[in-house]
Image (cartoon, rainbow, N blue to C red; front, side, top):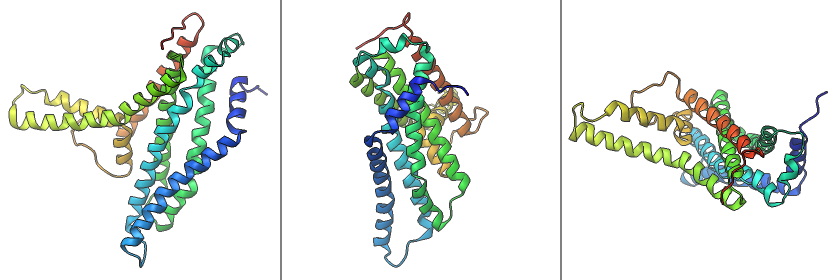
Length: 284
């Protein structure tokens, strides 16, 4: 029987055998549950006789968006100190003298953090059972949302790992990881909306001729939508985004998955190269 990676085994024990883990899961469920119960309470106050089943899709959307926001907050923070923390404890050089390669170390750190965030998502399944009580939501839609979470967590975790490898200080690494995650989550969405308004103004009013690159701008808008977590989640929930008429040959979820998986793998390879003793370059 093959032995488990010793770094991964150590990280999993440290991650799951502490009381802090149980408290973090309880706090996460409390926040998510507060959104759900608060939504149901507000609707009950509006109509105290019964809970309207047609609001079930809105409840599902509130639960899904709340979980996305929390995952975007939790995931980069868990991996942003994976390597820089070892460096600050002066244990990184010892870790690099083991028989494990730099790639194995990076992957083990990411896997342990991803296991914890995956546990957080799985722990919310009982809350999603509230949605099924009233119907109107397909199980495949719930599975699609959970698959979306896994892909998103992978790239966010890789961003935190890359920042942790590049920066010496955990504080700087954490701020950089949150900044990149914010740009990817909110910045691409704001830019897509801005470009759409700019395109409508110039293409329809100022330069309705071929002098305005309408097709190129539409392609950029569509690409920004396809890589934005909020836009993609809204499409999964049945809310249409900005209509551009542009297609890259894959459905929106295919573009999202391909971009996030490829970008995450590139970041992991870059992190392993940076961690290699012959290639290490750090910055404060």
